[in-house]
Length: 162
Image 1: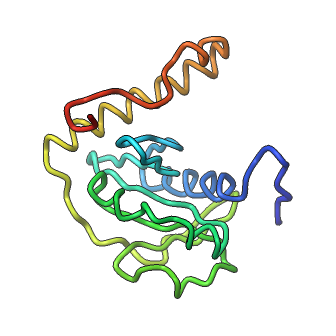
Image 2 (image 1 turned 45 degrees about the vertical axis):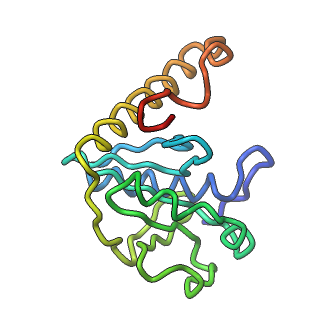
């Protein structure tokens, strides 16, 4: 069944939902729109049962992919990097040294596993902290929508992020 996106939900957000659902089957938890460093915002960050960190960028069209000039900046913030696209996307455009996920708004499938580039322990600690804070802020904003205006959106300042 194809879901018609509402004007409030963008196609990339629907892909992200399917990716997050799929990752949960591997024991991952995930957050959307996490800022690992100033100037970067990942679509989905997954945290695995062994503290592995995956970044997944969701691309809804050729133009969306071709306008993304920052994706290589995400590689230093994760153990594995993936693209998530729908089944109509021209996957030959995607760099072969990255992972590939085919997704829709309900589920996804890993087509090509991304190569592993293990984070250094200090960087992993920073990312685990950012993930936890981001998830907690999202939960708090859901429980108390008035708090969203009081919480900074750019993430935490750390020695690594500036």
